[in-house]
Image (tube, rainbow, N blue to C red; front, side):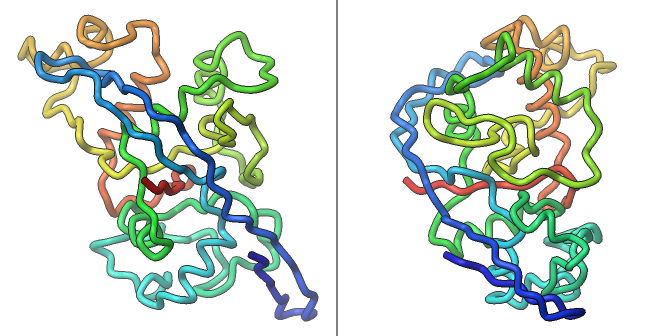
Length: 251
C-alpha cells in the first residue's frame, strides 16, 4: 500500500510505503509471569502478527475512514486530551513531522487501537501472544542478553523524534522492535492489577510486587518483566501516552 502526503505550503508530494506485512509466530506455551495456584502454562496456537508497530501513516488512513476517531471529535471517554497531540491537525501529521510518518503511532488509547484492529479485520494481541512473540531471540544482537537490552532502553528518556519502525532489532520470528522503540498495548493489558502498593500489609498482596513478588513469579531474574507488568497495571483504557503504541494479530 502506498500512502501519499501533500504539503500545504509547497504542494510537494511525500510518499510513505506501508507494506502491512505480517509474520507467523509458531504455536507454543506461555507461562504467566505471576504464579498463582491455578495458572498453568497457557497453550498459544500459532498466529500472525504485524511485522512492525502501526505507523502514523497507517493510522492516518484509519482516521480518514473513521471520522469519529479524529482528534477534535473523539469521545473523551475513549481517549484523553493527549490523543494524537503530536499531529498537526485532525487529518495531517504535518510537514514539520515528516520524519515520523513511518514511526510508530503513539498517543493512542486502547480503545483507538482496538478500533483500528477491528477496521483492519485483526485484533490486539493478548498478553500471552505478545509475550510469546517478544521472547524470540534477537538476530545480530550486540547485547549480552535481551533483558540487558530492555533494561538499558528503560533507562533512556523518550526521544524528541521517535525513530522509524525497523530501527532497533529483528527477532527470529521476523518481528521488528518488540522492545526498544515503544511500549505496546495488549488486549488484556489490565488482567493483572494489584489492589495495593508495596506498602500494604496483606502478605498475599505483597508477593505480587517488587522483591516480594520474586517468590511468586516464573523468572526471578527477569527484572524487565517486573517493570513491564507494573506498567501495564498502571494503565487505563483511555490513556494516550507519548511512548505507547500497538501492533495487531490474526489467529
